[in-house]
Structure formats: C-alpha cells, structure tokens
Length: 192
Image (cartoon, rainbow, N blue to C red; front, side, top):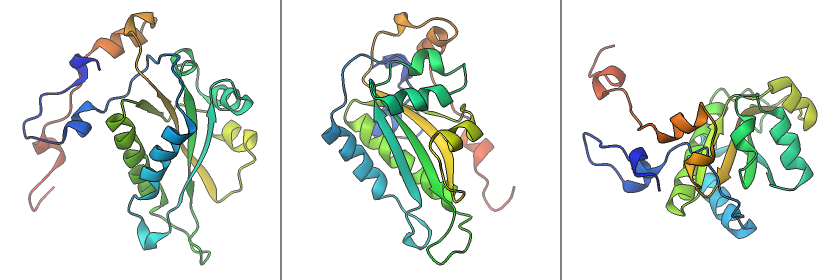
C-alpha cells in the first residue's frame, strides 16, 4: 500500500474506505476467478431502485481477446497504464425496468454496485481504477450492446506494483497525496 494515498480524514471513517484509491501501477500477479467472483458478489448486494439490480458486467482477464477489446475502447490517456491490469471490467446500466419503463436511477445504482465492488477489492488488497475515458460508441459496437444496456465505466483491477515503473504524467499522479473538498463545500444544512 502506498502510504501517501491514505488520507488524514477530519472525522474517523472505515479503514477500507480510506485505503481505497485509484491506482495505476499494477503488478503481473493474476486475480483468480474466485477472487473476482467475490468482488462481483459484493457488487450484487448493492441497493437498487425497486430491487431491479440494473448493473451488468462484462469482464476479461489479461491475455484474453476480450481484454484487448476493452483496452482498445479506452482513450489514449488510459491505455499506457491500463494494459498492466489483471482484469478489465465494463460496467453497464440496464436503463429499462422489467416492466419496460425507463429507469432513471440505473446509473446511480450501478455506481453503488461499483462502489461495493471496489470496497471489497480494497479489503482484499486488490486495487481498481474506474475510467470514464473510453469511446462510448466504439464500446457499444465492439460488444454489440442492445440500446437499453449503456456503458458506465471501464474498471481496471490488479495488485499494486512499484509506481516508479510508470511514465509521466502517471508517475506524479501515483505519488501525489489524495485530497477531497471540505464538507462545507459538499453538504448543506437546510439550504443550498
């Protein structure tokens, strides 16, 4: 664990939340199917509107053709380091309820499932990096997605490696401490 990435919070929070960060330097250690299933199980237990569970995941291990398909959908700024991930996962939102109505909460619920997945990963010394930097139409075409399944993020997962193997600007980002806005900028008692 890169100690610079563990924030000093104003209020005490769970260590697993403090220890989660978006790593870019991944080792060549493989993630087992069983370990990945554990992370997906954690995602499955996220809350969701009307218990629709709108999250869907397409994943591939490094060395599989679908890994290269996912990697090729990433924007150029993510490709240099994401190539070392042990697993790439495409998270999707099913934007239709079972009754056919539009589910405007689908993205929110997928975000909750992704948070569960990454929290479980962190608890098992697996690190993840969610990326919105991918080619949306290319991803839809590459995976022949139906209209109601919308790509949300591509997640790179892996075990940590030495950040010094990264080139700039990724090295500096990996070695910079984490910060967050103060609570009075994000929460308001009875007003905006």
